[in-house]
Image 1 (tube, rainbow, N blue to C red):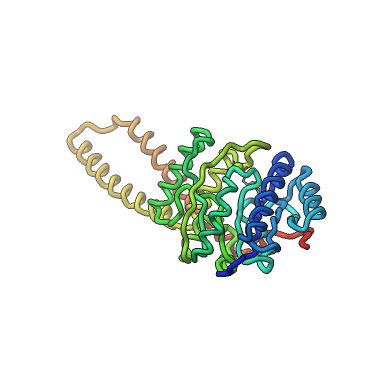
Image 2 (image 1 turned 45 degrees about the horizontal axis):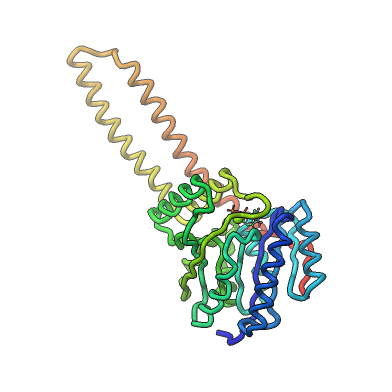
Length: 317
Ligand code: UDP
Ligand code: MG
């Protein structure tokens, strides 16, 4: 533990031209306050990671980095998604700080939790999860689907922190450990708790997005959920196997019934049941293939071991 740690706030940004000016103003105000109160060192900074935006995001981020020592800007050459953008930020800034806090560019997560997180670090915790106490600002749909997702993850045996997204503090040691995970499909919410370092939570109320639009529509959320589940658990594949075994048993029972009907003399009814089972079993086979395919796709992506991101430009003073 460092007495007056150097803090780097990592802010992944994708098409955030509308949100960024407000974000920069609030974050730099907060950081300046923390520096003047001696909570963090004067070398503390905010790092904007532009995840291949095509709007004015990079222009803005570069402007802040040029204008003040407090801001850094890293431009990725293409859009690699939130998880990889965070990894890019952590990896690029690893030697620049003692502690790292990752936060979304729209500041839906309460920045007032940041000083509290730093306080927890000083109490001896190496990882501090930001946990939202309400989801009133999210739509009903987002709330219920998120809830279902956490439940499902739990049942599938993965350890994830309830109602925690990617707003968290990690110290340099745990970040370095996280970077040892080479996988392309890195689902940090699942991996960070898995690492097992001393951790705690800080609660805050999640606010509404005030500028710009959400980059996580339903389709992307579903993708994230599937990734989260399949990169942590092979239970879905096992479920397919169990289903297969159950079907064979059902088939045996049906066979007995068919033989009985034949010998008792009333056969050749039952076209409807035949066609029904045909569709049902066909559907099950397709689902099974899909689940297995999802894993094979994962293996394919991992085996190629491609780099997770490419840094195009960086301004770190
Ligand atoms: N983001 C990113 N790359 C992407 C999509 C999103 O870096 O491909 C960033 C985005 O700029 C924001 C954060 O991820 O800082 C969360 O996105 P958003 O607020 O749109 O998601 P939501 O809060 O609606 O789940
Ligand atoms: Mg958001």
